[in-house]
Length: 242
Length: 94
Image 1 (tube, rainbow over the protein chains, first blue to last red):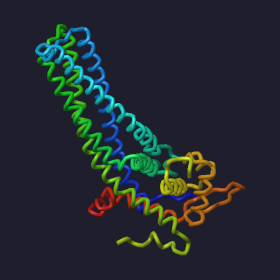
Image 2 (image 1 turned 90 degrees about the vertical axis):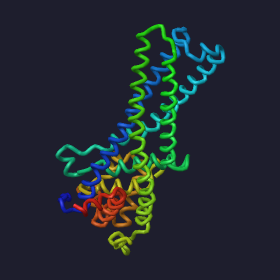
Image 3 (image 1 turned 135 degrees about the horizontal axis):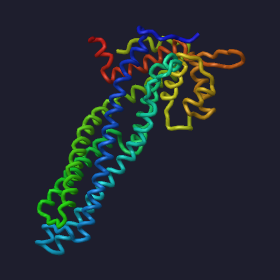
């Protein structure tokens, strides 16, 4: 006979508490991911337009006007750095997509009648394990996930700051086509907006990741206890831990 | 368990949860956990040996169900997770 969950069941209560929490974490990751993608797309569009204007000579920078060839070299160098920073954002998108796609797939509350009866909160364990897999992959290669998140946060902050600095120099540039100037300005505003949004979510994600980092060794301990488990010492899990 | 990067605790918790409210066949678990046959057998043998799941034979079909002991272990798993997010603490407050 199937077990029917009741509201007093501790397990169902735990799941009920945990499910909205995981949903919120997942939502946070999704917003972060979306802001990263939009930032990336706008930055790519901006850099393409910028390079096009520089090559066709429709834009003349203040530096090159003042210092000639030296100014051009500095402008090119700064643009190359911006491209490198955009590439690292692309890398972040790749890494996060591996985690988010799987997470979204697993965290779906069962909706069907039969499903609700058999698995009330179906995706909780797969979601935790997905987080763990993601965590473990980077725990082996790098030192830990929170370090990776901190690095990303720093790179995003730096690239955004640098981008704003570089683009603010547009004020001193001469652009023959006013429409293109307007497009550049709009792209810049969009980039700045998504950059700020991304920084906000990065800070929240860092806090979450630090929590998970402390949780996983405890779950490993749980598994070790199961390994030591036998029918004789079945009381193991019933004992309150100090 | 070499078929994936998942560790033991992840697979055990998943199987315990899948078998909690319904009896499941090995084929069903194989499909849901996406493990190799050898890995799911190993998992089931381990959980059976620890009395965390029980084997039921219904019309020549072998099914598995989480025992009370298994449910207790799963509860502990959730308690650990909830503790880390201060959810148990918040519940006590309410």
